Each structure stands twice: as structure tokens, then as C-alpha cells.
Length: 354
Figure (spheres, rainbow, N blue to C red):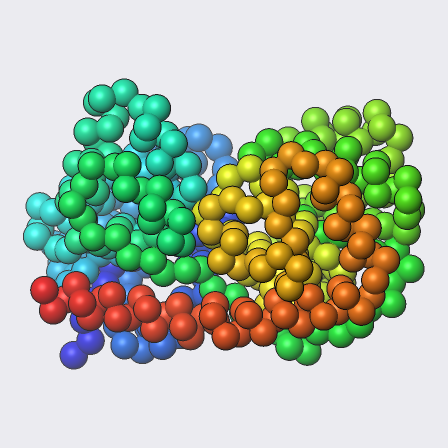
């Protein structure tokens, strides 16, 4: 008889990397080996809608604990609102003596813990102490979490990439497409992009920046318009899976100039489509990108350096193709969905044996 796992997830249609990760679990080996019950605790929309979704999830979880009696609870969390929303699940699981795996996807938790009040620090410590394992996305992130006073074991399970070898090809676009996927916010480095783009356009105007995502779009568009380069930009908004796949197939370069990250699903997705990556050396990114091999890592905010490497890639199709080839090979060898699920299954076995 299969062991029962209750997994706390965002809505499968929600925006963000966590929803992308857990959506990939459905119909896989994980579901063949374990009886997985998904409880959606978050959705996009108004505050009222989000609160109602969370309350509904708490009642569904309590019912699950009483009636179906799961053997294990796997919580996908981040920090900020996500952390506090997930606290009741940890406490309820503890009441029923069910082990908890807390799978942390965010990258801000260490900083927020350091700067938090004593009361909030104790809350984080108490929550972590009640978990059997903390899953983190990178070795770097594991080191960062050492600041939190907890004896709970930490294990690294990297995010994964889906491989599309058929998309690896030399592209003959007149205008090179530079793609960004993610939230349009300051932490993602998007407000550096207008200055970077202007420097690139001064040397090579055959470019198109596609910035797909939701957030501070109007603010960014106003900056771009002021610089007189609006014709080089496209803002498709937050896109569904099919639209995202189309953009990844068409793109020449993937660009993520973030100031902070965990292990971005957007980079892993781009690697799976054979794209060279231009990004920053923060969080778990150095595990994904090898400078000069499958892309370039630049210090956050270094406008001239970003412009230089992007100009190099758009001016050298062979270099761009070779880096894309390295991306897809690295994704296949180290970050396939199969390898990710194998690690998850092994962790489940370990917890259930203890």
C-alpha cells in the first residue's frame, strides 16, 4: 500500500516559480510511488480571495489529518506572507504527530531573519524546529540558513529543468530577441535594463527586449519611454505555459539581472530550451551558469558589463549557439525532472523510516 503524502502548494495556475515547480510533479513517478494529496493554499487575485483560499486550505488540511491520516506533510513555502500562511499547517501536523518537510523556495529568509525582531526570530526558529527537514535550493542557500538557530537538518534539492533538445538550433533572426521572465520588480534588476538596453542599441540596434511578467510595468515603461527606446521593448504581461514555451523557443538570449535569487526556475527553463544565459552571481545561480561556458554572470547593477557581454553574444551566432548547447547539456546532466524527483523520493523514504 502506498504511503500518503499531503502536499501544501500554491494554486497550479498561480504566478511564480513555486507553482511552476509543483505543476511538474503531476503524472510523474512521484505520484506512482506515493499517494499524493495536493492542498492549494494560495491563489492570485484580491486580498479577500487570497484569505478565503488560505482559510479553505486550513479546513481541508484538518479534514485530511482526521480522515485520511497522511504519513507525511510536504510544505512548499517562501518567506514574507508565504511563511506566515504556512505556519498553521506546521502546527496542525505537529498536533497529529505527522512529520513535516518544509521546502523553502524563497531567497530572502536569511536577511529577513537577521533584521527581524526577537519575537519574529523565535517564530521562525520554532517553526523550523517543528519540521523534520528543511529543503533548500542550493548549497549557497544552505550556508545562508545557518544564521537561523535551529537543529533541524537541511538538505539541498535543486529545482529542475525540462529538456527540449529539438529547440537547440542556430537562429537567423534579424532582430536578436533578449528575453526576461519573472516579476517586474526592483529585486529582479529590471530597472537596470533600460540603461543596459540604451548602451546596446548605441552599438547594435537589431535587438528586441521581451520582458514577460507582472509587477511595476507602467513604472518601467515610463523610464524606457523617457530614454526614447520604447520601440525596442515588448511587454506581454504574465503569460500562460503555451505562450511561455513559444517565447523560449523564439528567444536568442535569456536575461535575468537579479539582485537576489534562490535557484530561479526561469533560468532552468531557459537552459532546457538551449539558451545562453546572462545573469548575476547571486544565490544558487553560480551552480547553474558557468562563466564563459553556458553564459555570463555579472555583479548586480554593473550596466557596462551587462551591455558588453550581450553585445558579444548578439554579434557572434556561433558563440551563442555553443553556449546554448552547453546550457541544455548541463540541464540534462544535472537538473532533469527525473533527478529532482529521485531526490524527493529518497527524502520521503528517509523521513518515513525514522
